[in-house]
Image (cartoon, rainbow, N blue to C red; front, side, top):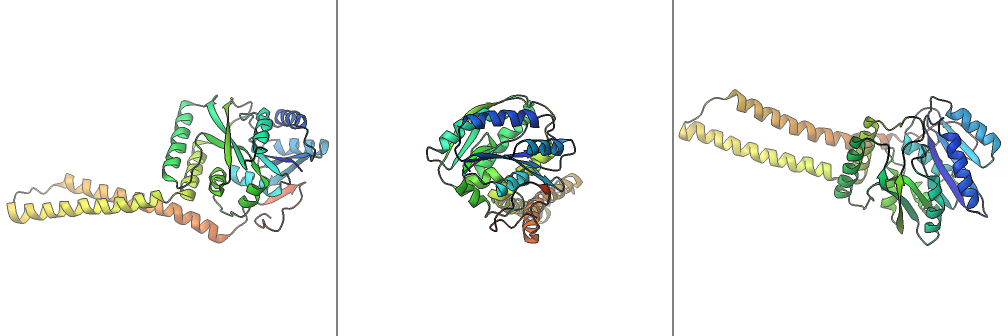
Length: 319
């Protein structure tokens, strides 16, 4: 098979039909001799998304779907889709139509030029609040600054990857997935195509600020030890300042005898030291929580219903 398209679905009943028609029109014009498939992953939707996917699968044998037993998250949904792909090239695209399916032929052509990854880089982001654009911009740049690998800025998961990259991703069983970071870590020749991201066609985004924060923490803790180093250096710095304050206090008390018992300075010192300690403990706790999740080795996802073939034995993480 030439091409697989992975589409994570979460409450997208307003977009599924339009997305399917646009994808089918684009891919059929690409004249792929080996054929193609669409893999929809229903991530615990509470609307009629699953019903629509069943109808599409009944009409078109190239439509495959997976239905999770509950909501496992966007990155896990993409991972499940990748596990079931058969294409030599795989496209990852969201269902909200902010990423245009019409870009697929350009991504595919770029991949055939010898690249293993071609990601779509956003020039503009329409239909998003100024706060969301600002936080996204800051996140990508901070991540690029503190990680030891080169993760492209202003990119999402919209991209095309080769079978070689899919095979490598299947060997990375982390529970807290950050797929765009994993693809950058894998390496190989990578390129990009710029585009303008449009406004969401219908429905509401599933990416709330709390989910974005969790996603950012997954990205940072998966690919950077800088927060741990900052916590360590801050501990030494605060200890040094505290030691100097202690020397000054002893000097004032026993040498100059010019001191005044001060409740304010005492409280400031306690709060400052306590705050730094809590921040350091919190950062360490984030890393320990992720280590604990990986040690338990639970399956990444549970499939309730599917019309796809099971993954090969090299990917035993699904049930």
